Amino acid sequence: MTHRERFRRLMHYQSVDRGIHWDFGYLTEAMDRWVSEGLPAEVGGGDGDRMGRISSYFGKDPTHWVPCHQGLHPGFPHEVIEVRERTVVCRDYEGNIVEEIQEGEHTIPHVIENGLKTRDDWKRYKEMLDPADPVRSQWDYVALAETLNKSDLPVSIGCGSFMGWIRNWVGAANLGYMLYDDPDLVSEMVNTLADLFCATLEPALKHIEVDLAWGWEDICFNNGPLVGPNLWRSIVADPMRRVMRLLRRHGVDVILTDCDGNVQALAPLWLELGLNGMFPCEVAGGSDPVLLRSQLGRDALLFGGVNKRCLDSREDALAELKRLAPLVEDGGFIPFVDHRVPGYVSYDVYRYYEREKLAMLGFSQSEVDAIPALSGQAAGMASCYRSGA
Image (tube, rainbow, N blue to C red; front, side):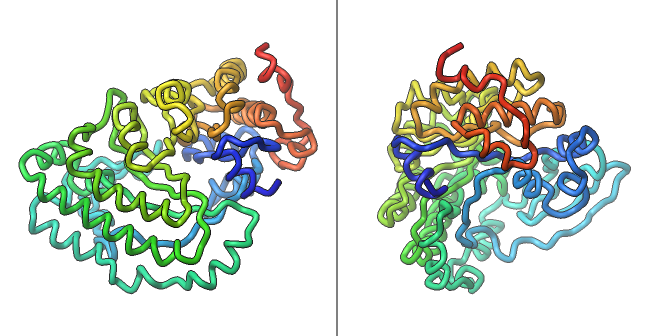
């Protein structure tokens, strides 16, 4: 079975020879620690795409991505405003003034001031979302289709963001006020984004067979969303539905969004609008995949869902995998860590977790031995997942 056949069948609850082996990546602290604990330095150290090298070393299943420019262009020029003892204050690509840590544990930058505060500010952002910008049409999709449509790998494309990007530009608190003080402005922003997504997606979808559309929101905390279902329905639903219908009209019926936190309040509405994939199913944030499957049934496709907090020991990692094994059996689920692997996870525990996950997914010993990071490492509990031991 090819990677593409396997993905298509798994996403439609059909039988597969084995599950799909993906990940979400690794924090810098984890990569640094693993190099000190035995990960080859040429894989996990140095500069460049460290995460990509580690993913390859652990044998992650490959995919293709269709190029599609859907964000701000040209964006705001990077501007250093102040250099402090441990941090740098600068203006970022999205127009926000942020404070970034220079050394030590890397975190999301602290936003000091958001770039989009008024209708006049929005005019500048809107200019950077012009669908007619030549950067949006730089690819020859007919030529790409000749390769991608024959590929054995699943093909993915980005499908943007309906509220997450706006939250980035405006700020979480300011978005809450704006939704009530000037809902027409927020509606204009969402419709502008939807226009851009439709304009950039359609030229690619006319020629390329896409298996997965991948969006981004990150608008939920552990107790629910920043934008509730009623506001989402009144402001976001129609433009979002336009994009979902375009995707489905071109045969894309696996459509997910990346949203940390608790998505329970929004997920039923997303399903109604045509978005059916939940990622990364952050357990501690309230989006346990077991709970989501019980609430949403097989209409929801689930990605991620392995509680990163359970990777503190071999025993806890194994217990977490056994907890998720019934979902793997059911289908429509690709299990991997529910965000980037943090620095408290040792290299030993991560290798153990990866090997046991592959056993749960049905990998053979020869398939595991072909993975450089796991070669010769036998699963001690390979038979327990289906037996319920």
